[in-house]
Image (cartoon, rainbow, N blue to C red):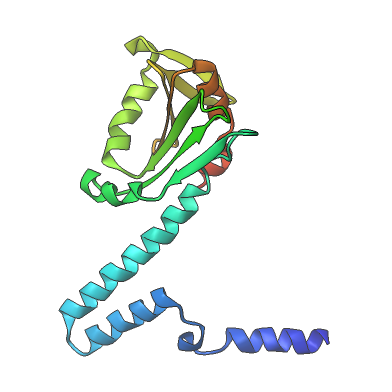
Length: 187
């Protein structure tokens, strides 16, 4: 039985790309075909479409770093926020609203990566104490606190912002983020 399973697996891997294709590989193949036929305009359109689909997959993977809601709380993931990133220089965005069971408290987490705004905010987070902000740590991660907002910068490319009213809740929310896993995202 093992031999049959192994042979079946090897045979599946050796199938032509078209037999294993998905929407992205089909689109990339259409771009190659259009290019080979001399239709550069259509090839570019197909490449743009494939890039859009790939960015969608990457954004979905990025959203997985939004922490689960605390016990009893609800989490509502914003699925529309990525659309505005093109006007902000590209990159990725993931955000969610977290609401207490009695609705007495809430906070939102926004993560942005690989964006010009993130780069400019990095200097502010790095110099938070000099700018009069309170600085705390979550493990080895620096967190700047200021006026109902907690901010952290991961690998100088991912900005995490948590907005809410209660500083203790903001820090608890920051502690729920897997900074180690997030620091390896996209590497």
